Length: 258
Image (cartoon, rainbow, N blue to C red; front, side, top):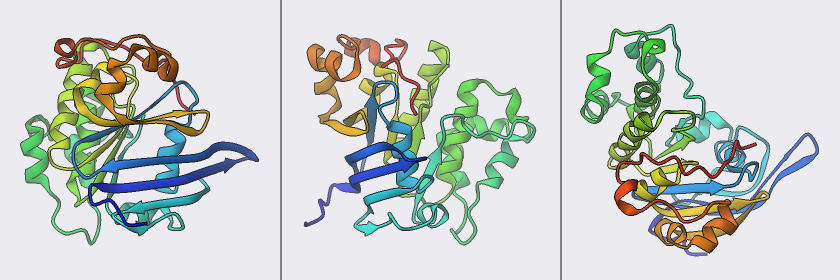
């Protein structure tokens, strides 16, 4: 099969078996070389497991091509070294360390000079709060740290898992802006339950159901199709475009992934 020049990450027939239980039964997805690709689905559809499968954090089978190179048999540290940054669902912030120390821990050996100018250009607040303990930051500021860490190294892809989960609407808008700026520098695979954020950021989307790919296509088209959104995500019509630009609406897909 000839690789698609517009696709950075191509996942085919990704299967995950944990404790004798099949979690993923054959996930297919493509992540574009530019912008944001959203990974959606109902509760327990397998989104977080898919992310973990891509990174090699769980036993996996199938094919995971990063820029045409197979990674499915590689250990996680090698996959990350190939250029994937990961902002996990719980952010993974060290609360007792400063912002600067959290960033310093993310520096990857042998990856060249850390891109602090880029991180500080995108998120000037991190430079201003360099000496502040990360545990005293707001949820949105902590998300800046989590995403900033993924941009310090020369990554080809950033994966952000549920970055707005549990945040107040005002902070959701702040985090959406963080992701929007990050996507200008590197493509993003976004696992997200807030459809206003998806509408604002994502060009394409992949929907999972029961550990399989149920839909792939333009994000806007899916969210504009009330019947498809209800069938695939369990919600009605998404918020209007004007509201989505501020990403204040909650519009969850009611999930807490497995």
